Length: 338
Ligand code: PEP
Ligand code: MN
Image 1: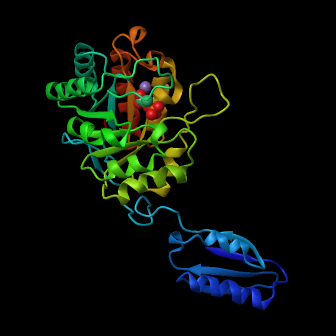
Image 2: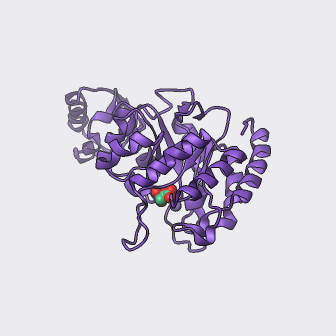
Image 3: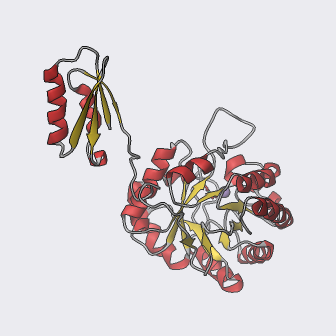
């Protein structure tokens, strides 16, 4: 942290700030310039509310220099993390991780049919919500445990890893029994109790970015899971809220290089929630791979017109297979495989 003092600061004010820094268990390095005096704080500033130094007399500005997260940070671990999905495959290595499936588990037949199709196309994980976080309480809420049983059956049939959402702390035990990867949805990124509860399981966690969260807040949410003892976190960008209306959410692909710079955790892109429209999904899949994403999580439905949730943004298995073929060529161009 750097504390910039005001011009004309008194020595007593500098001494006072130095004392506050020492009281916090840190050390100082005072740099006296011709115009300004700057105090560099040496040591780990993250445990302390040093922003309060702003209140001390003679202080102009306080600027943190360390990222607020630790375990999620590249400063702590330089090499990229490879996160196992639980079925022998992983996300974060050279191979692009493709996870696909319906928004919601609707029926046994629906799920098994899509699972086989996406596996055939090259997916390593099967997505599908059994518990759905719906904005409208009168809409389909998911099949609950029955849906989880169907997911487990689809895993048996295809070998795909099951990725499914856990909506609350009280569901963690149940969902962990069926899922390979626990999905924490965008609405729950700030549910710190849920982050900790998932961090205490042995399952890998797919953490979606809150739709109004900053990158720092996103990585701090990941930090909660890591800090609770679970090293297996996969980040997922699913679009943010903006003033735009031609998309359901605005998909900021610039987060991919930003995450790569700040963190060792892999990042997947969800172009389905990220656009809200099936016709945009293939293009955003291709763009994501080109930009360095570690994989995709895509909503695929054999009959989108009759989907119980998110039909507008669901692509068919045929379109998914074609998109994967296109992504494979892009992956090759950027030194990855599918
Ligand atoms: C979903 O994956 O279907 C979903 C509800 O995602 P999000 O939490 O990103 O809205
Ligand atoms: Mn959905």
